[in-house]
Length: 175
Image (cartoon, rainbow, N blue to C red; front, side, top):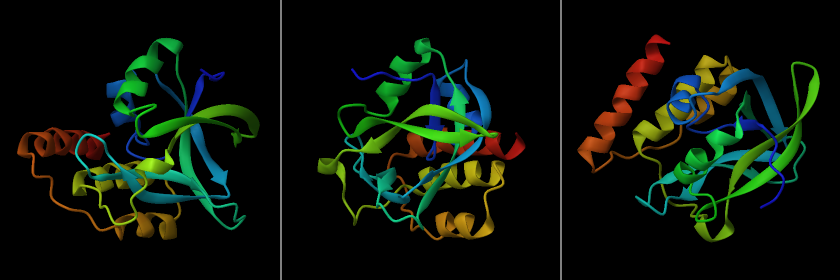
């Protein structure tokens, strides 16, 4: 396992502290950050439900950027987060240096493994909405928020899973 810093760059469904706090109770929000030369794409196929998940896809284009938030975590948080993020079976760990509140920090993030990229898959509507609520919470620029809103979503055929995520979305709306 490569070196892992104690700072996590969240850009997808973990972007909102309400969602991440349910997975990593010790999380502490440090602030927003941006990952240059990457593009937010909903093309990572889930190995669990075949829906699309978010990916910070490296493009090399300096005009591209993924907006996210950096959280301080403890090593005790890593196993649970790795499990829900399917580390090694859908996502790989990547380490980058980002600027947060004027300070350079080494952060880790999850990026899609090439074998799991499926450009035609769609996220469940609740998943897209988790990312959207996080972007709104952090006050991301309207063009970025609009782009997330425009992502086509599909209804989750698992009513129980959809209901669980709808409850999280309601909690986010009051946070």
